[in-house]
Length: 148
Image 1 (cartoon, one colour):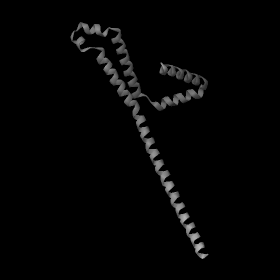
Image 2: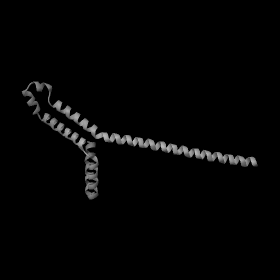
Image 3: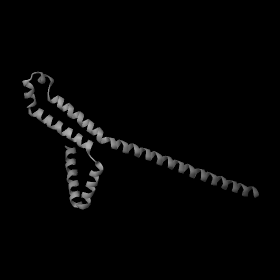
Image 4: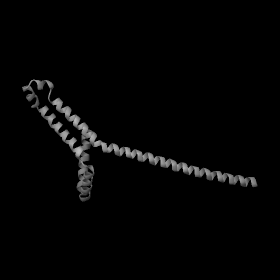
């Protein structure tokens, strides 16, 4: 009977040690997951902070390509034909689009997104119904544009 009691204590002691080890293992796993989540969040924040600059670079690149395609190289050598090439509606549209892309790139570089967010939050607090209607309208228009 004594063997059973000692065996029972031994089993209880083993169970307690395993529970303690399991608890430490669970804490280590949770800590590891938390560290990985914080690292991932930091990476996402870093990429998000670089996004406006990357978009601005691409807009500028696209604007430059439009400008270079608006004036054919042969037309520049011909002198008078360059003026004719720049007066076409297509050339004017390309130039207008290139200017818009360039101004968008400049805005992205200079924008203070925290200030913009604060302004939007203030507008929503002051005029929630109007903000909701505007959001619904924009969502409707985006939905129509995507479906087309």
